[in-house]
Length: 301
Image 1: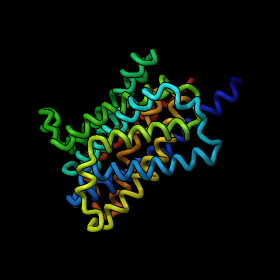
Image 2: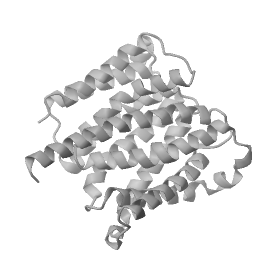
Image 3: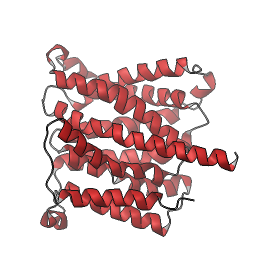
């Protein structure tokens, strides 16, 4: 690969993650509104959501070159990635039943720290002192938002149940990122994502069939269907494609660095949806997460 091609790949990877951070933010606000209706369980919601997303990506894969048999080799790869994907989203929507969207999106920004650790052990990606400092700044900002700018709660590490549940999913998401390039065998992005989503759907259906059958689908409020459509097509299909595209062009820490923008996008989503604006001190944490992003991307080699 020529230097100019490598530079173009890196720029495209950064652009993909910028769009990713904007799109994924909507799932926190819309997902939180849907879960707080208490009309559908997280596993039932994600069951139908992944069926829709899998079909959409399958159509995309067929329309852009088809699904070759070689991509089906070593199906255990997709089971691992799909299992992590399923666990993350189920934990996310379970946490959103009680946690605020801004707090959960702030927890999402802890993934770069965890991805850097997993990236070292899985891909031997070395984290420099500058990147480590940036990750520490971002983690501090994220925790400041999670604790709602309450220093006493911050020092006592008083975390809500919803936040703790979601954090378990964050760990799974951070592990997913370096595993993508490790397990990829050069498949086209739509094909690779299709098989990951097939595995994700099977995992969710395996553990949540009873929840799906018990759901009164005809009685669901409109916000659940809006959230379902958005998370299936935009927050699953598009963001999974963008994340996979970027993961093979950038190292794990820099891919996940863009998650630092997510709380800022969530605030805009919350304002647009009429859910209010956080207190002024919370923006200190938001500022730290944005600073971390710039530190991570500054003077990139």
